[in-house]
Length: 119
Length: 111
Image (cartoon, rainbow over all chains, first blue to last red):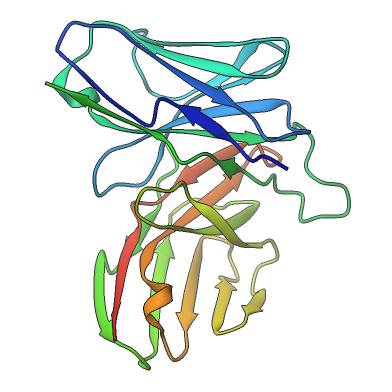
């Protein structure tokens, strides 16, 4: 059972460029969330997609946009890259409804991330 | 805005020692999760605590949720080099859909 897969694993861009990161969720998961993790920090929530729509959004500018496809995979796009966008971008998938009989809290399954360096 | 603080930020100990790391917030969460993240990997869920005062054990790891559901602790007994990693706590709100992560505690266990 494949978990969450992300591509590319590493990439280098220059200021002002645009980048697209890709994510395939775990089998059986229909919700995809994206997080930005700066060096030495915890993950910061960017946005969440379900049924091909953005359901929730964190405190990130409009330069950050996303998309979810009918097969539940997702893309994160960042335009007009800044040096401060350098980070590990994590994709996490989950079922929309918390597991029946569980704690009521959803379980996030993370990919290994895409490390973006902006020069 | 819900914020989580974790302490200590860094911890370096010898194999066999015990340690406790803390996760604190001024906000109440419906539940709290602990994750461990190793270099080059995404965070992996260790445990979810739901009830105020709840204690859960996972081998040498003991997790506790504060009575008011605002804070949590993770205690590791007889730490091993394999415990090395970044320990993240995440407060869960909005019926399990909103996750707020703390900055993490970076643990290094030396052989």
